[in-house]
Image (cartoon, rainbow, N blue to C red; front, side, top):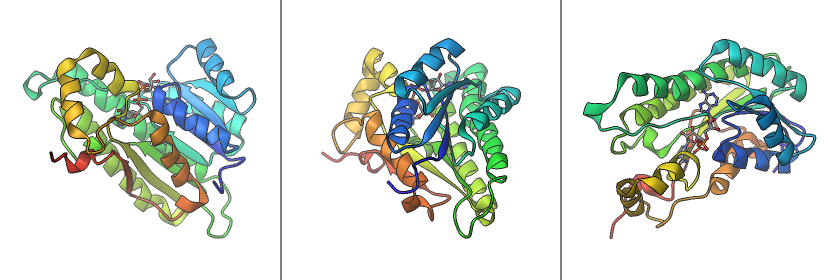
Length: 259
Ligand SMILES: NC(=O)c1ccc[n+]([C@@H]2O[C@H](COP(=O)([O-])OP(=O)(O)OC[C@H]3O[C@@H](n4cnc5c(N)ncnc54)[C@H](O)[C@@H]3O)[C@@H](O)[C@H]2O)c1
């Protein structure tokens, strides 16, 4: 894919299942990648080494803490040289019936998924604005791992779906404000991925699994790898004119399934 080789990529939640799959695709296309996550430094460094001995690095980063995000970007900038793509991917979920949603779960979900995306995207934009303008070339792109539930309510998803809906609006605001400065923003919205957050719940909760099994017109969940290529596309030259929108990778889940 054109326009990825030798670029600098920063991925939050980079040690999770989708983050790892996305990092692999960028590395295979010749990018340098920083994984930002909550793992202790030694474990995170080993994860980065396993992906690529030279072009991948790890920084410890709690996306809910501005000072931690600042430190992570400062370290990333040293490794990457230039930041071209930032991916706000760190996320969490707690499914609770609306009347039982606890303030703690609500606050934490919004903090990680939405405030974490805000802090990451803002720091990324500040760095990208330092990239020199060269004609109509982009100075950078800010991507988000959204979700099909950003538009479609999912049972017991009050805090998660709300956080993803907020993230979608955040991406649109960034896209509109920063387009004149040569920065694009977009979301990749997976459907139900048999990986990461969904896999953990699917494997332990039979009633959740029954709901999932009924919902996807393509009759299966996706893999993390099937989601990863869309990030690459949006960051590549082919995605340069795409901003403020969502690339839905949901196997038709949003359509609902008809027997
Ligand atoms: N798995 C799915 O079906 C699915 C579907 C749609 C969207 N998503 C989204 O994909 C993204 C990645 O999720 P995943 O499924 O790979 O799950 P995952 O649990 O494998 O990865 C999430 C990563 O985020 C990290 N993280 C959590 N809190 C953090 C914090 N405060 N600071 C930094 N990192 C933090 C975790 O350590 C983990 O590595 C999330 O934004 C999620 O909402 C997942």
